[in-house]
Amino acid sequence: LNVAIMFTDIVSFTKLSEKMDLKDVMRLLSDYQSIMVEAIFENNGTVDKFIGDAVMANFGTPKSYGNDAQNAFNCARDMQISMREWEKERSLKKQLIIKHRIGIHYGRCVVGNIGSNERMEFAVIGDTVNVASRICDACKEIKADILISDNLKNQLNEKIKSELIKNFKIRGREKSIDLHKITL
Image (cartoon, rainbow, N blue to C red; front, side, top):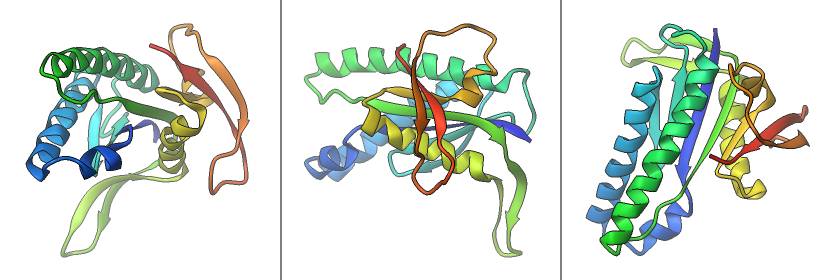
């Protein structure tokens, strides 16, 4: 299937959590994940998994809801709005300000049940998933809050302003891709 894959992660989470009480780390992660999940569900996405402080979501499984790339982009927009509101709340309480990154890619994936007789799970796998994860990682290098692939941008129903990053070398891949730095 053609699927939009999104990864998010908290900026400098390892450094943040090192100085925090474990209960506070769990509360922070739960609050962050709740914000992410709400935006994902509101935009017809599926939460694939939590990976530490990262969230993986997909748009287009188990069924498509129209323009899945647009739904993923709308989700990123909603996430940014929610994160700004959370930032204000945390600031008023004199708590650490939490920032995050988002990477989104669109392409073909293998979708289905994978596993053994003892443990089976629904999974979305393939190069598109790997690239989406690397795009989220690339936010660090490019100093971006949101990066999307050219594939995703070309599927959108709207014209968006972005800064083009041409021929970005994705770690572990021979072929480079064009990315778009988004400011929402």
